[in-house]
Picture 1 (cartoon, rainbow, N blue to C red):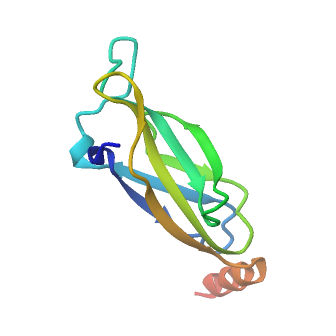
Picture 2 (cartoon, rainbow, N blue to C red):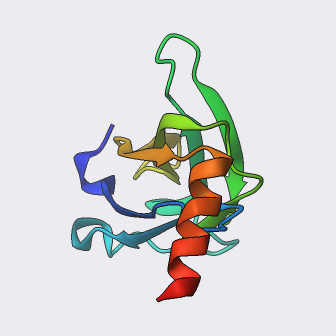
Length: 128
């Protein structure tokens, strides 16, 4: 795996009355020279992203392996069950030989509140 394919991953935690998680990321400057793959660009290029729920490390669950190669965000709906969740995002790419590779995963921890907590947060937010 090439370390130059690392991602910077930012996460918007679930807020009051939120019904989805929005994952947003920026490209690492080290892989700025890796454009999206195309008919003309078939080596050293990005083919897409894979988002995986790795909360249970022994049983990872791929959320989506078809995130577009030029995407910088992904929305997960509905919210997962309350509790702590860990997600990883990897770049799918073609290396200098044209063979498929994946980046080292960028991970983020998300604490999804129970619905009653989200309702309380929403109510207190309205009073302000």
